Amino acid sequence: MPNAVANLASDNWADAATTIMTTDIVPKAYATQVNVGQENINITGISKGSGMIHPNMATMLGYVATDAAISQPLLDSITKEIADLSFNCISVDGDTSTNDSFIVIATGKSNAPAITSRDDEGYEAIFNALLETSQYLAKAIVRDGEGATKFITITVEGALTNHEAKTVGYSIAKSPLVKTAMFASDPNLGRVLAAIGYASRECHSLNDLDTTQLSLYFGNLLVAEKGGLAVSYIEKEAQAIMNEAEIDITVQLNRGNEKATIWTCDFSYDYVKINAEYRT
Image 1 (cartoon, rainbow, N blue to C red):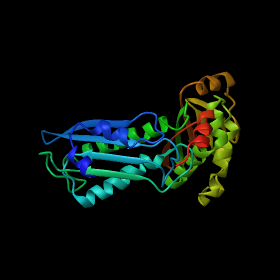
Image 2: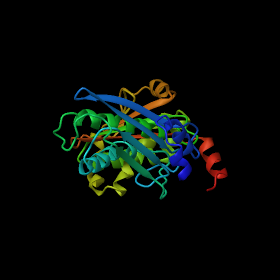
Image 3: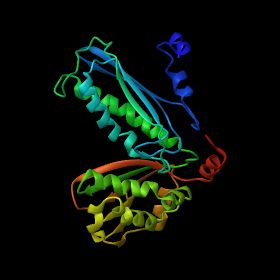
Image 4: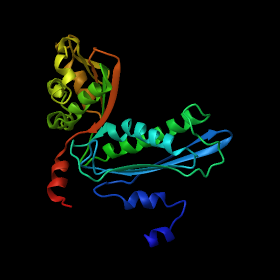
């Protein structure tokens, strides 16, 4: 600790991002700036994580700092809200540990007016910048997932509650059969539908989910509707979407107005190899 303090410098972010890496392949950092009251506000963040990534306890570290002046009660609230929209929306393998931290630091070194209320000038701009930084860092963890070859965005719409939407999203994201299909570039919509179906095990309000009202999209392609294969489905078009390095999956439950987005990756041979050989 004394050596770390003695080596404090404003340009040490890159070193810090590298130092916290474990099985990460690349360091993860992001910086942005907003203007409040004619003053520049700086936001910088770093994170680490590659495997054992899933809410709420994972081998993930995230640090975001700003020179804005934000009151402690408001910063506490902002941190929880941002966490639920970023680091609590990612999954690499559905596995967890007791080694996670997400810390937001507001130093107050800027000359911009202090933010003590959500109604204050600059609050929205600062919140959005903190969220932008946190989401970038969270997605970077997924992109660097152990052995990952595909980055997958799962959007669940039309849920009764946000919990329903997130549960369905995570049910898909955690499924080994879905993840291996993604690795194989296989448009196996049956595996995705099955994961949606058994999401009720973790969210009982989904017990009455009407599957005949459900729609499933790969990219912009409708692949399932009304409880079965979409009439317009063309395998060749679905295959082309699965061949991409980034894949969007959209589920429309058509039972409410809530939605959630989950980011995940595929399972490759390398994931097995890394975790067969790696031991803490």
